[in-house]
Figure 1 (cartoon, rainbow, N blue to C red):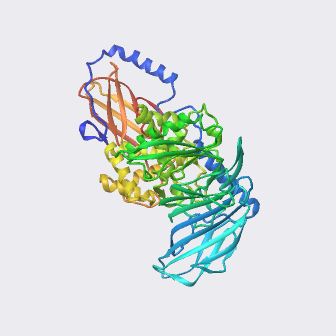
Figure 2 (figure 1 turned 60 degrees about the vertical axis):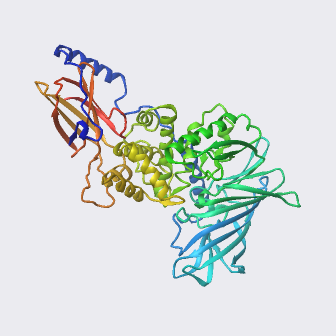
Figure 3 (figure 1 turned 180 degrees about the vertical axis):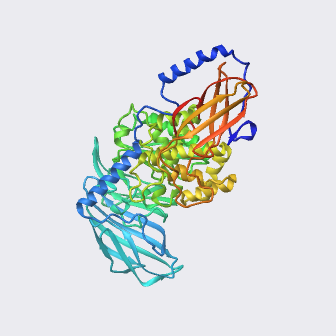
Length: 605
């Protein structure tokens, strides 16, 4: 079906300036064919697409942890936990740590509430590298079973619905290989820093290591004099009689276990201030190695502007009542710990490098990942696709860049079987395996949704999504339901073809102007070697891609006009009036680069 004029979602005829002589047609077509041979085909970026620095680091960490488990003969962790029968309300996590010594001891107090009629036990994740020295329920010692990475604590009597209990676990040991907690050395001292995503929280503290059960987490760390502790929220510190420093970090909002962080080093603290949309002020407090804190001052000074740009798009920074900042980490990428993003020391020490996009990506996770978290790991794109598109939106708003052009040139390899070939929905057991799909294709999905529903509906919908799931979790189905409710559209086909289906559509298109130039006929053919995947069948499911496709008509005099074609089959042919009676000299599919696609050829019929 073709839509034109004001009745279409985007396409329209625009008045043209006079009819060029037919004698120019051959010359103009020769020029078009020459130009086509000189530049890449429309919609295809022939340049290499580099894996996102955060994605590469997260994937490498996951692979290292999996290899370490395999070498030790450890059973892979449960992906989404078990049917627990309890809700975790809070974690009070305490560590004794010296970054110069690879050893950790700690106690975690866990407040739980029952919602099943009877829950006989609670299974926590805790790596077997640790020795459990005490387990206590409500002040009474209990005997727990610790094996295969699980610590099973009995409830005797069983925990009933609406009942509450406090479980305390004390443990010690040397952290396992490829664990969340890195012990490392920098130019002026030792450091211990953590990144736990996706399944590594259990490698340095006992927890229900699943993203769906968010809880309030307080982190306390005791370290030797001269060290500074950094974590989420706001801190209080106390000097102990033995000279050590004890710091307690409190964050009032509930977060997932993979977002809990611990950072201990001889940090230099750099302060700045962000002025919120309503005039309030918030500290920007960053923790950097003393040898490069001053050199990073320009990067840190720019962050308040990053916050302001994203706040104008998504609503106020979610943790405006606490702080924001970055902390130097042994992790080689970036990690979106709430209020305190971890950035690799290897990146921060490379002072000439422009890391604006990485900083914006991590900051955007404060909304998409921390405030609203994916419920299950197959929806990790709800974190990473959103953060990737936030990079594009930042460049659009702060620098005036065209978002479609940015996506085409920097977030696509243009290949049918390339880095974006996999489905956006991930394998929950290995969520960072195909980062091109999760990050880049996930970002493309949001841009295509924006173009489908329009800017007003898109951005107001994102804010509504953030409000509806604030401090909780969400699924791709809930995102779809929200946009369907707000726009009145049936988005099942759109969701299935772009999130559940591998690859992308490929096109060939032809045009023909009638002899008297009164009509133009377009034929658009989808040539991809796959059909759309529909995990759940629906009455309106189509095996081909359905979306508004803008076609730009170029006339002999160089003027252009846009029309919108909505495919009705693998081959769609439409004829429409050509009131200007101009000869069409060429066509371009999706001239704004707003669709993830490959255009194989366009030309006269």
